[in-house]
Length: 218
Image (tube, rainbow, N blue to C red; front, side, top):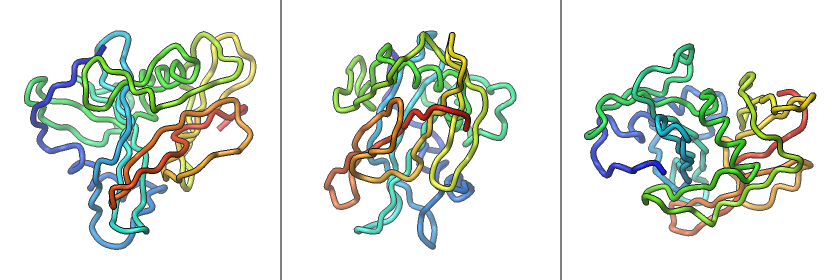
């Protein structure tokens, strides 16, 4: 399992997100300067032990109108070739040195592990504790294959669609990342979904769909 280093990052992830989030078509924050706050999420392990994988929920704003966004991120010790457009920024890690932080929707390592989570072959890990699974995260996928490869990414008004090619499957599958998180059940027809919780600015909790698996092309 990945080791979580409790150390400094300069700039911090939230500082990078404050600049990056307003550049996204799906960003739903209000007027004024973004003030993202960490509100929950979980991690996944890279089997090779090279890439950090985090699904972070962040809130922006205060009161009942605060918006929650899903930001999947990967942390790498070197640039990901061909992914310059997906770079959130770089940060100096107190232990690991320079880290390249990417929008994980464009990172094949995150996509493969998200599919493994849906298929029941990976476990969600606690966001800030070593060697600790997070049982509050639920995931399922009907007729799961043995793996999946990233094909393309399509941005939507409140989501990001990640089209994958499942091993041995003829038809494509789309993993839809719910960039704007909404509480409650998601009853849309789907082959599978990932559900998790987050905290509102007032301290109450919410739960909703992070990812839904849809048959067909993005």
